[in-house]
Image (tube, rainbow over all chains, first blue to last red):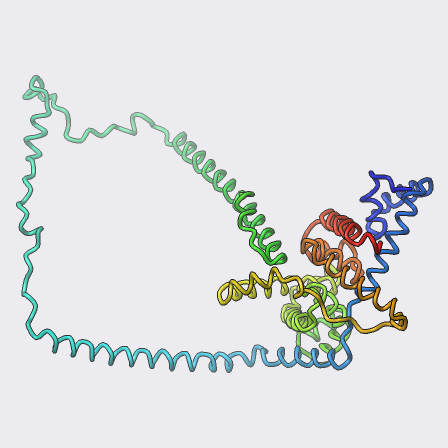
Length: 232
Length: 192
């Protein structure tokens, strides 16, 4: 007799003792009247027990345990905060020496190179190369006064109604109270902030997704870049 | 527990020895599952994780059990080691890395020690056959399903603890567990 198909997941979770109390009560009630589910549960339980006995995790021997404990303690004591400056010194000293050697070698190398190059080309370089920019004729600039005079309509010339050179609107006359402008600018800023928040939220989601994908790919040892791209 | 932690923070030898004595075997068992049965790797992982746990013991707030917190550290250390391994393997020998990934024999663990049922040669043969097939079936599972199944069945961890270690929802853990069990049942139909 086969188990009920809609109780498959409950059956497996019941065997693993992963049901909530309510689910367990419902499942036990069902099992009381269903022979198929009961026998399937027993079979699955026996299979899992068999698997557990078959693939038992080997324990560490007492020697291995002690050796591991000693190694960890040794590593801990060699990395105490007091020991750090000494270690840093040991790391930095060879690095500093290597840098010094490189600088000295580079200095002498350059000196030799410049000496050799002067020996190869004894003739001095030409004193001055006339640039193309210098040869270019000076660009003729238009006379601004003449241009502005030409733009004024002939009828207005001499009447005193000529337009000013740079017409500036009187902002005080247009908006005597600065409050609405401030409100508009605050609204704009708020909108900008809201946009930024939305962007940050979407970025956070993307980062979470990428983390999850990276973890899965690390566990499975392969690349999931395509799947991430598909999600994005 | 708080006193023990205070002593551990000072790297007190006795406190450290007591802490390791309490959690070493379980930590090794979890590492062994994560390292797919490689004992050397499991020992290294246990060592690195214990070292990290003692150094970052200030971050233990007591929200979960100490053991669960330690398992979480083992899991993150394992992920870090995988990350660096993948990076260096990619730099030095991408071809060999690809070959190793496709090599199924790599995952077969060392033979477990003989138990009392091995007196009968036929039983012994059947047991070994089951071991091999079970191991292959387990490693045919997606990594998270395998880890969830191993944590639940071989390490007797609760769904809540597994969810905490893997940093995912309990529903997700149950789903992984269900799928893994179904897959194993189908694959090992002759044994089930």
